[in-house]
Image (cartoon, rainbow, N blue to C red; front, side, top):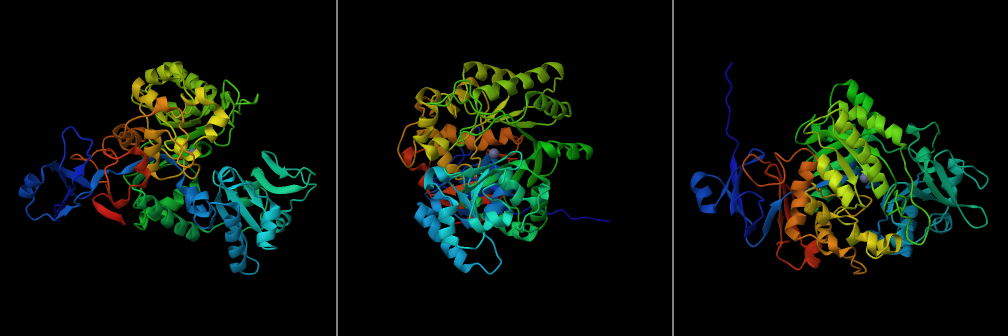
Length: 537
Ligand SMILES: [Zn+2]
């Protein structure tokens, strides 16, 4: 049997500015197959590849593809099937209710109405009363942008079997008006049990989205992310149904967004039984580790702090008991797999570092670098310990830009100088990745860059912990090279250099050269993955 191998066709790419993040300045690069094959001057590449087409983007700027090291694409695929009630889409509570009213008018008899991405902190407080007025007797559920709670109207509450005298399921809560009646807010298990009945013993009248529907949502998500310049993401809590969704899309050739996965810790025994672990997969879809949680949230104000939240004596919550954490992390570590553990508050980070240090002493695994997801509130001692462990920080890039002054009212100015601490991580030699935690924060990487550089709220202009500002060049490296390192992919992502994947973005302006307050509004012209255009303006 004879086989013929063909050289992959080569194309040359150039623009006024190319930030290749390589050893030497790059004017142009050649891509063949899905890789960069050569870099240099345009003249030299033309000479070397005389028949290669040249894509010259003129005055534009080329940067390596943006890489979001922590977001939730499975959740996004679901959200994009429902009414978009995000603050960006509605702006005010009245507009949100207009959308619900239109949705209810268009609903067929017997159908439910679902809204997603509602943000109470920005849009205002929604209860069953307003939903009843807008949706009438069409059962309606609106989920919060961060996914931990939602609001149901009266028709939905009674269909769920919830009434004023109900007690919430364990791990769940009901919101109530002052007079004790349900106000429609369903928290954690009170919502999950009825939204995802497959995962609990409760039956739900609400039909879950089918795999075919979720595939539609995934296609929308991939397009939305490419339009913002993303070429790689890490899904930071992958459940088996998400993996199935992603795998089907990959097999159908629809997954053009390189996706790595931190599998939810509850499912780790299955992964282990199969004998697979970190690194299993390919450049489109890869398992990179296991996800667990220490504490609560920054925006939700439940993270575990050594000093209480401003104006209160509340110090947040620990989600997973220390002994349980130690046991699961030890298993994953012994197997040589990467952990990505959610720890926001300083107390949570210390609990996690104690465990990582103990394992590093007792079961050395050289080269295995664990992650701290969010790693929000730090101090010098935490930095020293992270450096010694070679642990990786995956902080929110865009929270200062997104939340602005609200952060100061929750955490106070002193603490904000030690939160989302990109400057401190870089100065201490701790690897730091770029991440949005979308849908908990905005997904646009250029907004993340702007936030890291300006530390300024885009709505209110409030400056948040300005000592943590980094340069635009540093922010670009964080959102490309830093994320690649956090995902164990630094040998093939984050640079435009021979052997690296030909993933890049063509921007209308140079984010390193303009007033940083304009970075988020730079138009994305083209997005390329593996040398192939996947999106154009
Ligand atoms: Zn997350």
